[in-house]
Image 1: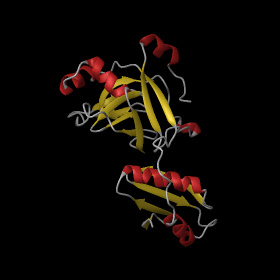
Image 2: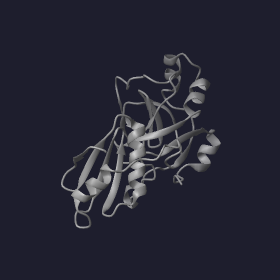
Image 3: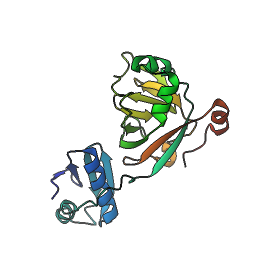
Image 4: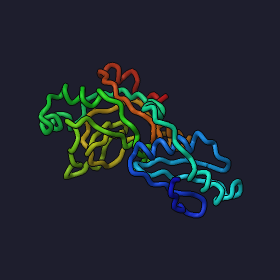
Amino acid sequence: MIALDPLGDRGFLARFGSEAEARDWAEATLGADLPGVLDVVLAYRAVGVFADPERVKLEALAQDLAALTPPIASGAIGRLRVLPVLYDGEDLREVAERVGKSVDEVISLHSGREYRVLAVGFLPGFPYAGDLAPELSGLARRDQPRTRVPAGSVAIAGRQTGVYPGESPGGWHLLGRTPLRIVDADREFFPIRAGDRLRFVPMDRAEYSEREGEWLA
């Protein structure tokens, strides 16, 4: 049985011991298609479930949620989002020096694995994804954050990597940039969700120019 805490007057919050447990339970909740459930939001080791109290009695929903048993995870849950990246970030060489690797090795390490989106926040549509390769992990945020980070910037900090969906201040280390647009708030286009998987694919300047401004499919 899952312990649930009230989340306002129309939702519940479930907490777990690991990100994998939270992800599996979120997927099970979505797959159960329970009446009255409006949204299921995964964030690290917690899952929020929001419901319409006019369509379902919350007490009954709580019992259904608590009884859910996630299937054995396949490791491939969540949509795969592939982001091409031009690795020309302002901090790329500094990161390479700090971790004792060449620039090419940093690019290979960053693009050589699949990441899980652990949460979305900071900016609408900003994916916090992990985990970085051990060789790239552990860099604290910059001592002096930038006042302007361009949209599409791909960056790392701690054990995570992320993509700035719009121009913003920011303190992560910039490795490169994707030409793809990943957010359009006006039409409520937020294709990357917690639980999805991200893969970064190196590209050259010519490819970047050809694809600049495309929407993430």
